[in-house]
Length: 50
Picture 1 (cartoon, rainbow, N blue to C red):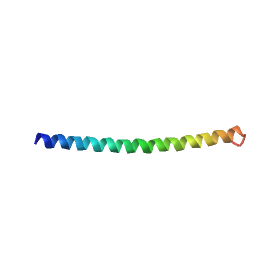
Picture 2 (cartoon, rainbow, N blue to C red):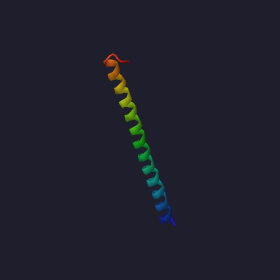
Picture 3 (tube, rainbow, N blue to C red):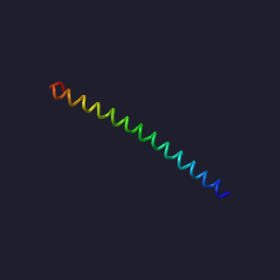
Picture 4 (cartoon, one colour):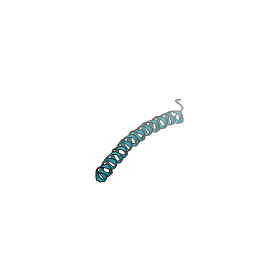
């Protein structure tokens, strides 16, 4: 029974870790897209087309 509980806890922990990695990857992509928009706007303003 102790071994079963240990395996169950390990499975739950692993699932949580994997879900967290996917969430952080998605957040990273969102931040990257926002940064690209800021760069584009900065370039437009640099060329006096604000």
